[in-house]
Image 1 (tube, rainbow, N blue to C red):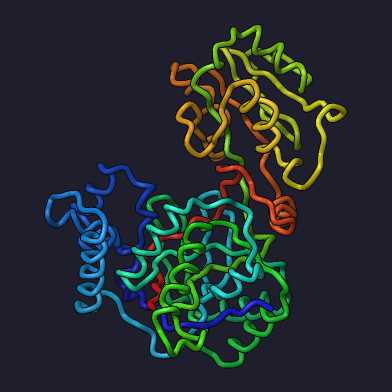
Image 2: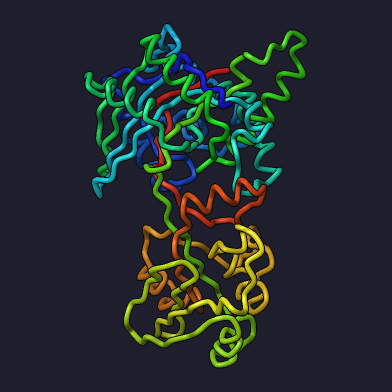
Length: 412
């Protein structure tokens, strides 16, 4: 039984939403961030990068307090407003490829996260969890929803379709040519339909935002322990989420680039690969895998196709069937000596939207010696791994949609 609540979002006024909305802070280079803040006084980046105002890099608790100050300034200047009653928010994104993503922004339960009603498929790093928890505790708000996915549901779909017949509260296009729409759902009957539909779901799944959800759970534990009158219904016991149906989720692969062959010659490396794969040299023909357990490899100016020898490799569980895990167990760890995918600086990742030609270019430039192209994981694979309590290797999935920060803000 998933607990999903409406909330009173703090959000930009309609005339400024396109100026405020930003990508996640980490996705910008320092030069890009400065450029946007130089010419746009309304960018949400001014809030999350308060050191810009003082021409100084600021970190830790000092930065968190200044983030809080900048946020309050935006509210005081009425750049942000807050809805008077709790609402759900229908949010739709149409990207430049004309792919459409549509779901509901709502508050999800930290207790559901603890009880595995909200299921996870990726490992998180304790340091990152704790750091972001402390950030949330100081700033008092969350501006970037966790992406959750649920089985397609006719009741929720019907409510969304009816809501979208009205004029949207927001409609704007970014420089990435993605068009964003938002509708408020404040009708009591629609709210009840949405809540009851989610209440009948035994599980929902984290698609993107494992560290953010983990940090929100830790925050709920901290603030609950500090509050002797905690009822479990306080805003800090929930976290902002964007819930979309499984059919709307788009999963891309993360390709792998490795800087060296671990002391092996090209010929020795290929011989070692032959134990696990049927190998075909395709020369300059660009090869991209078209099914699971097939891989593309670019090495020394040639593309190769690698087909897993299934009579050799043993599938013990859902994780063993994941292409990223297979590559780690057969190549990256035993042959190339990459033991820890989270910290080894010999490996880098390129999401599938960059395509395999990007991998080729990085190898040709001499930055890396070999590149591997993978077939993307499916939603069913992600769910099976989560259901079995297993965790994918880092950078196994690149999931869309990617949300903008600062469009809806959840206070606690």
